[in-house]
Image (cartoon, rainbow, N blue to C red; front, side, top):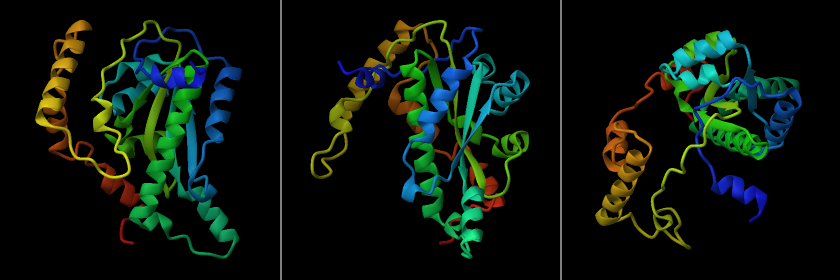
Length: 246
């Protein structure tokens, strides 16, 4: 098996970390690999805030709803959509930047943040570290903006814990690949039978790891998606200068 493919196929979310620090050279290599990740038009409108300070990580854990692994992992990286950086370029060129006032601009920021996140996680795993991705930084984005002193025209999109893991979690089962891969055209939604079978598989997984609170995929996803689960994203993004008027 190709080593890179093996890392990707063995993806897990690690939430159990040791106290061993991540070495400077290792962390530098992970960040440099992420720096090479592609961005739309080579705009590079992404910045990483690398948090090693324990007190700040503890604050972020609380901002994210009490996620203890954020405080435990020795490194937390916040991935930021950064149009403040590109505005400097626009000003130098004598242009007026408006991309941050559009839905396309927010989509680009989210897409490029996702590419950076995947690169960051893959690089860390390739070096034997564990990661877990944290979307809950958008639970209270203003608190995070204040903590990290982010300027206007920036928005914290997603975070990632990095550290040496104390235990190896099982691979979580996915929906059948037929629900994911569509050849040449859209080939339809999964059947009720397919989803019911996956619910059974996922419940068996929860039982195998002792998660008595685990739910079927259909009910858990529906419960979350019936609402905007991080409703502060829109008003805080707007206050940072991100609009969807264009």
